[in-house]
Image (tube, rainbow, N blue to C red; front, side):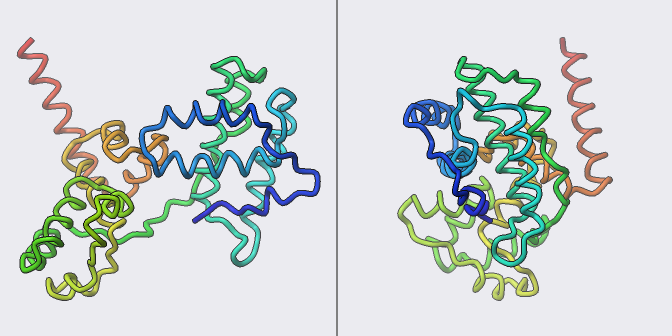
Length: 255
């Protein structure tokens, strides 16, 4: 869900100075995912239409902006962002300011930026249903009569690629609903994005670390990836810990 532009619709708002565009572009070029770059640009431009000039930005103004972001959660209807959107928005602004500080463009210290723009505890929600290890092969098998969709579905399930990235391959959209019915999984609400969630959860269950999954999915922030851990049961976490501990002991014995 897009963060509301209404925060920037302030009669006293100042447009982003032109020199910021250079700093912002440089920062965005450090991010791997095109989708993340688009989302972060939108979030940062929205924020600084309110915050104004980088050189005069104060801790008080930053704290006030965070308070406005949290207050927006009380909005009604379409103007109310999701808690996840607020967390991502603050993370984007925080990352940009830390970059500006690192490059000498901001006088606020890194500690002040992290303290003031700390993320609120997002409500843990599982908005996407995911397929189990037994259900995924059934869905894949249902697509065998259509070579294009079969390959695309294998790609999404195996790599967790975004639907937008699949479409960018110029091979068309991936239709999931019809194959859910053929595979007897029509009681599930599954989309290409939930298949991406499923891939991430499968990697975590197989022993991949959150950092490894973050790099595979192209997340700019580890906090985004850590939400997938909330899908895991305690028994899954114990298996992962035991598996990684066994692997570490084997490497130590071979050294």
